[in-house]
Image 1 (cartoon, one colour):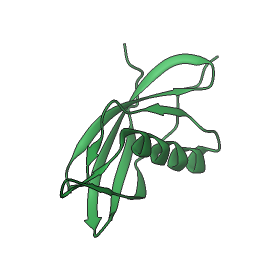
Image 2: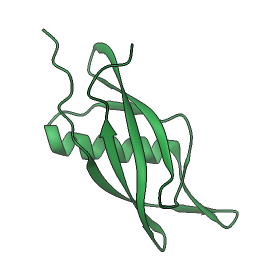
Image 3: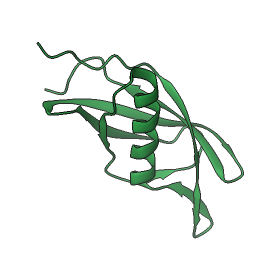
Image 4: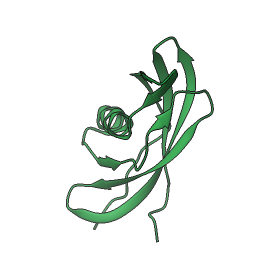
Length: 101
């Protein structure tokens, strides 16, 4: 029996890299931060993939995908920037309750 992820909204603090006057978080950095936070919360590390960079601007959001181990079930993940202070951005990670169809 496969158990779905038991994740909640998790705050994550990451550095935003400057580029052309705008601060952005690379897709890989966002995914790694989400993986770190989720692993800390539930004790096992998921695989998160984010398709694009995320602007370090309050309210900016992106959709990512999550899988766990060898289970092929995929969940959606919403990453939302909640605050930006200098070169640091905080974002929330919210995993969908139901798997993607």
